[in-house]
Amino acid sequence: MKKIGISMLFLILCSICYAQNGFEPGFIITLSGDTVHGVLRDRKEATFLKLYKKVRFKPEGKNATKKYNANQIRAYAIGDQMFESVNENALHQDIVLFNRRLPSNNSNDRVFLKVIVNGVASYYQKEWVDQDSGVLEVVDYIKKAHNPKFVRATQGILGLKKRKLSAYFSDCPPLQLKIKNKDIVTSLEVVRFYNNWILNDRDNKLYKNN
Image (cartoon, rainbow, N blue to C red; front, side, top):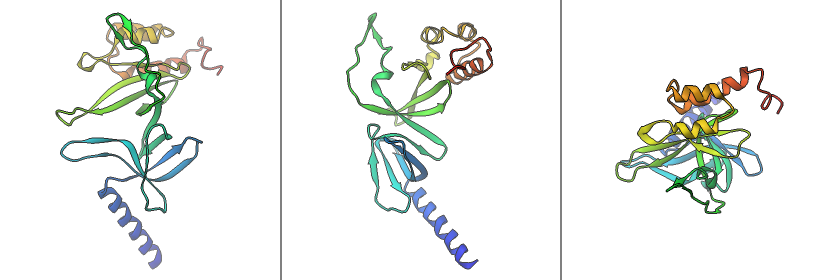
């Protein structure tokens, strides 16, 4: 019992030490699909918040810190929060300037997106820090499982990008109507409605047969 008590105390002290350094328990998913557990840190919280381009990771049983960007791992989790690596070009396919669609930069660079909902339609957030205020800001994105394209769901304080979302969810007329009538006003509501509709609509064969 004494040895167990000492071991538990050691683990608690280690957890406190990691927490003080900004590290929290979690895992990474490697490019080969392996899950490696350890402790991670992806931001520095001080007077001004800083998001790291490379997540700091210490594997279980090791003291050395490794750094991974979004090109080097598939995903990582800190606590119960998941972040996925996606191709940055996929986020900019719907950018239009002066009625002209902007071309992609043909870059293979990837970025981490925070996963809010994972489903037939998934809801993501891209985090960034306002350089003037140091405040954390987010941009909402939605992606359907059978569609490689992400759609930007919101436009700042203006709320949902109704035309974009209506076009993206053209396969779901009830959702289009709710967006138009402002019965649905958040990205989370959009995704939840669509996923429930897919699950419960018996006439929808596309997803149930895949």
